[in-house]
Length: 275
Image (cartoon, rainbow, N blue to C red):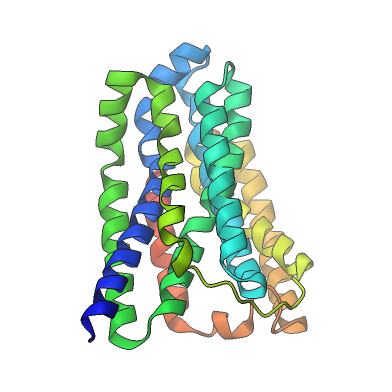
């Protein structure tokens, strides 16, 4: 393995892992600040949990969309859009004078953060091959897990020193990493048309799963809505995949056991937050 390529892979994968971890802190660190946030904005702690729930919901819904869009137009445009949206959402949330505005900001913050997992992996996968790629992806996963796991500690420390608003603003640091990654981000795409119906069906079904996972803390009405979305969405997605095997959710992805296992493993971590 040439030293220059190895060093480049370490640099890029570490930066991607840090960006990944900061996106994860949008939930892991913010959860610690909920009691103080709720008291300051005049809502109950139970209601304040929606600040986490909506972030996680948008993260689940939008992740697949960014992945497919990057296939069509390349990684740069959706990455800068996503990180920019995450940054603006974090800033507005940190300055929000009311809980309602905070929730709106968290929706946008989560929708932006959803770009990071898919596009981060795409950057590494497109730039390296073989053993270098495997090592780089392992470094991404390890760095992201380490940063995200520090979320509760960082959230508690920052909340104690600077208040809950600084905790909400923490993912803004991700914007500082994008210029360092810029030359490593692939620009080419297939320029094919996006399967909008397929995107809506997949996003709606993902939203249903997230609502079901969150229902123990959000109530039976949310559980019913989540169940309805899943019951209606799964057969609709299956039908769409059969009709458009190369559409938003390619049939080759569904049949790839490695991809399916990775997706289930990735979903298990945020799901555990609501267990």
